[in-house]
Length: 427
Image (cartoon, rainbow, N blue to C red; front, side):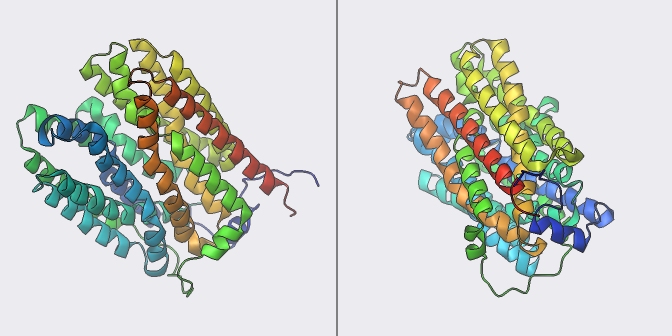
């Protein structure tokens, strides 16, 4: 049996079903759904990219009695919850449409930040800005991502990239002085606003963004009539999907480490605190452009899994190159390169997973199961990297850098194995 090209839309059951169902790949409702998804990502994952500002403020001002590793659990829980609750939000979206999970998610996001504005103790902040906010984000995240694949097939890579670039825009627009990180930094540290009012202003902005997103995002397919609560058996008996999920799990153990630690690393090598803050912005700006670049490449005929495999390996190589980034200009160049590749990877995994789904009607569930499993890798990233750094007395980033490179290259090899497995399947 000779391997055959894959990643074309005719090569998997889901892809063949998609062609039969016909995807418009455009139209006013489709593009409004993309716009709604973009706004939702600005309000959800985009907010998380500004978490370093809260981390610093809590440690220095609001919660000075708590050590930084304890405070870091707030951000870790936010990211974990955003992924973990995808299991249920994806199924809710399949059965009842995206409006229900988006509406509930909007309420919990706003309620979480409002309650956090009243908090005075660590556990109160953890419950409100950690758990409540993250549940709301998790309910919005998966339906927003999965519904795009109902409208687009040939442009799917570009469209998902456009939606996910909302998270990077929050730092990219840092260069012009708007959105979460700079807004938070200016309100807290420059304009003299209290933490309480800063959080309330953010909550109202999230409310406006999410109301617009909920109204704009529309499903294309009829609600699923399947009685199965979750297609877990089908998911875990599909060996290709299991291998892909495992590869994604390994990838998520390492991909976010530089995003968490680029600022303190830059400061250790002589970068001023203000410029180190912009190193994080540069990394995210790279991610903004990387999302679009890889999406267009994948759509051009190169293939989603092919693009994901090569980009993941390249990201691992750049992860090892982090070791040699020991000057102010070198760190800036490295941050831009890593941002381009890691941002591209985050934009392409959902289209890859959608090609493995058995039918378009379960795209939400398929994405939700995968994202929920990967939430545990995301939750462990910060503590693992922090422990590797603490073992060196917080002076040597080498173990963390090696871990980043190894996980990314290993994941790339596993993605390549998934691609080869599918290519060897009979017509």
